[in-house]
Image 1: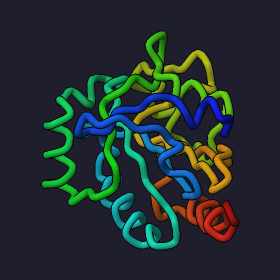
Image 2 (image 1 turned 90 degrees about the vertical axis):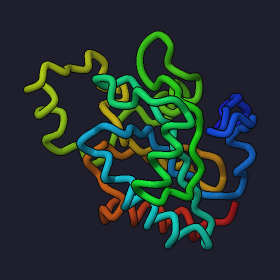
Image 3 (image 1 turned 90 degrees about the horizontal axis):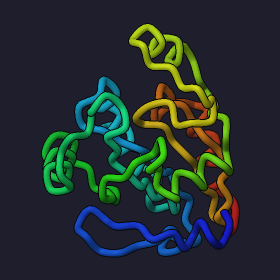
Amino acid sequence: MTQALQQIPLVRNDGTQATLADYRGKVLLVVNVASKCGLTPQYEGLERLYEDKRGAGLEVLAFPANNFKGQEPGTDAEILDFCSTQYNVTFPLFSKISVLGDDRHPLYAGLVDAQPAATGEGPFRERLKGYGVVRENPADVLWNFEKFLIGRNGEVVGRFSPDVTADDERLMAAIDAELTKAA
């Protein structure tokens, strides 16, 4: 990850300021999330992954986004309440951002530039087309729960489609490979 990407201002769910540099030396799984999506149960797997791998240096960073059919309409406080009461989420939640379009947050612009293609894209893109959802730019974030993997060295090393769950062998192998590397 470039120095510029590490320094992009972020806001945690509680309103405090942050950057990815705050997590230097960790393996990061950056996920755009939503509370009212068919994929929302992925919170459970992400929390389990976080609990299992946190001690080894993994951080799951969740960025709520309302870019897809209004599936994250809540305020930061409502999102936090939902995540903690429905899924017992303990990994870091950030303030709601945009991951798509003209108002796309600089973090997501940088992540997409670094990894324009996602691993594991199965039939999900075709299913979305059935609902009239077509991405003109194939590099754009497809939907909620797309995952970007950042290694300990700060490089964006992987991107996984929304239908790749936290226990998917491809994601697990990529995370484990990064966890074995030095910062």
